[in-house]
Length: 136
Image (tube, rainbow, N blue to C red; front, side, top):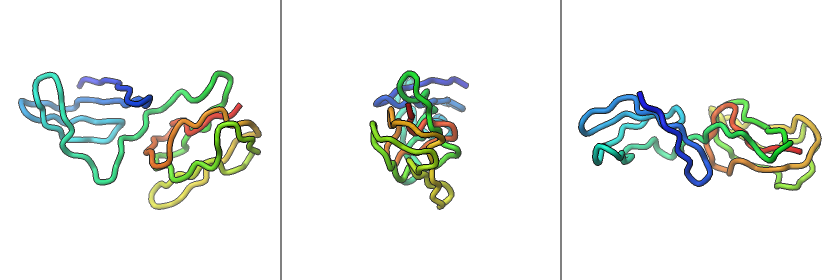
């Protein structure tokens, strides 16, 4: 199995080639499996993709130097970001909402602070441990 890390528009994706023959391959992008058709020996083109799914964002290091990342506690889809960079937040304030298993989960600030960065967008799929935003 070969594994690669690709950066696309600032997001990192972990791509593993699990199986490959002359014309097809099975790859995993951040843990989601795809069957792909080989165009030639050096490139693959995605031909199958789960309906309405985006590749999950790879775990990020999170925000600016000296900041504390607020990380996703579970895999899901970002349905709301309730703050902007520069906003002051209080401990316990809902800063984002994730949908997982058809339930909305409030992501709360663990401490008082100022939003230093927002690392994801509404609609992004995230894995557990991915930085959503960071506080200073």
